[in-house]
Length: 293
Image 1 (cartoon, helix red, strand yellow):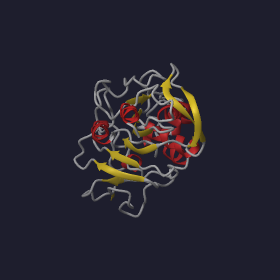
Image 2: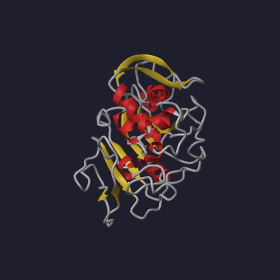
Image 3: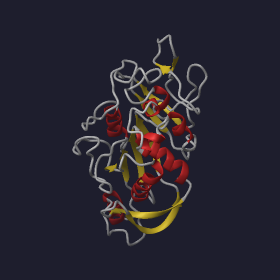
Image 4: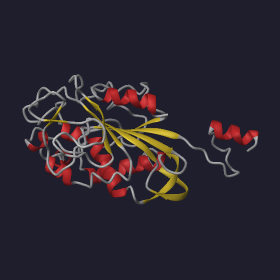
């Protein structure tokens, strides 16, 4: 490869690849949770998480959806983002918060084996990128980091603590969430789970350790058709949520390709971002900044 070609690849400049050279770019996608956030289609609107100026991984993009409707209808927005930034020579790191974990899991299980068009990574106002030629199966995703993941449901939905007519709240009933899609089918992509334990207001309704919205059985990626009680080491009244991908104390396994990388032994972190990268999301943001490059 000659010097001009090496410069083109290094700078990744558009218009320099007529000779067939391809530019590879890494992106960091952030998928928010329930209640909504930034404008749908605007990948630079981080209203849900916090200031856009805060470092949160290479070429960060916010995948916005309405935060209220069922995941089947909202999955299209995730697919648009994945098609935009995670096809061709481009690869993605993904961070999720709360219901974003469920939305991404549903999308991978149901569409991760589908044929996707390679795009130009240039989104229009609706968040859709133009096909640039070629196709592939699924998306190029390095790994996922899930803060306070609610893919296993929340007992708050079961007791009606949320607006019960809201489709997303209905889907967060524990048994419903766990039957919504095949949680083991991540297309071989690892989900690294961050489980927080600073629960207060609704702890009476949430089994074991919780962050005020989801219990460890969900944020820790524990498998099964129902919820269960998991705690930090030293709690005599429930089994330990174990670190890593191994089986939890008491014999209950985690979903396939799910690994607990943070368990809140000090009960220091809550569920909410407070629109300032707060709670356990702050730990994921820190790790995305250092690892998503």
